[in-house]
Amino acid sequence: MVTRPVAAPAPTPTCDRSDVSAKTKSRRSLLRLLMGGSLAAVWTSLIYPMVRYLIPPAEASATTTETLAAAVGELKPNSAKTFRFGSHPALLVRLGNGEYRSMSAVCTHLGCTVQYQPDTQQVWCPCHNGRYDLTGRNIQGPPPRPLLTYDVKVHGEEIHVNRRQDA
Ligand code: FES
Image (cartoon, rainbow, N blue to C red; front, side, top):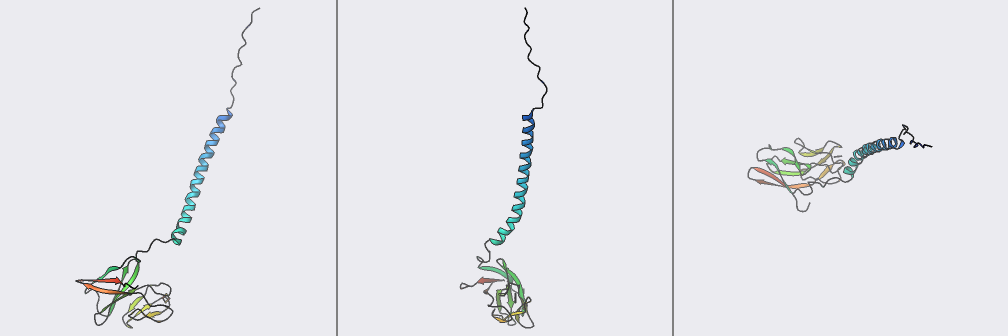
């Protein structure tokens, strides 16, 4: 009797479930990564402005002690110029007698920018009609405090404004 070797059954074509499962997992991972990245970008764009608002950068004007405000001869008598002192506006006023005065241009009421009025020779806040005299003293309207005033020094052809030591 002859025995024939039993042939191994031919491999049947099957759908390899582990391969399909790996591809699906890979796609899910990619989608999760993209979704996570998108959410992180959205949250960052929402949170960053709030954090910047709550924690503002250190103010440059707190450390600025002197700045060039104008050139000699730039201002006519009874006129003024607005310039930047650090990060805030300031006023340089030339009085009728040629004397210079300088003060912050930030109203002490709600922070509007004040301006010099040659006709009244006062500093006026257009927001709520507040008024200051040329020493910075609040004389009319809602401003609760005087304006911060600065020392003015002429160096050659330049007019410099200095923060006062006691300010
Ligand atoms: S902000 Fe200047 S008077 Fe109100």
